[in-house]
Image (cartoon, rainbow, N blue to C red; front, side, top):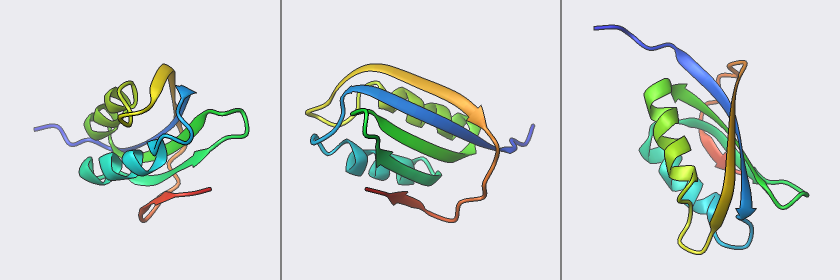
Length: 94
């Protein structure tokens, strides 16, 4: 069995993703996927997620991002691999 290395992804979610509980639903999903990092709103109206974990688990979060919270309307998800920062928890930031 091949072991997976810790990965880091910067994920930008566009659309109607603020004021629809997107960050809090992202937090719940990230915890379910055993990921660390954070989610926060951007001034542009987008949401930024920095997530670390196994690639399969990050891919589950990325897939979920297209659906999002019940009231969100996601138009685009951009996921780019980044440098591992060794987060200890997953947080919701302002």
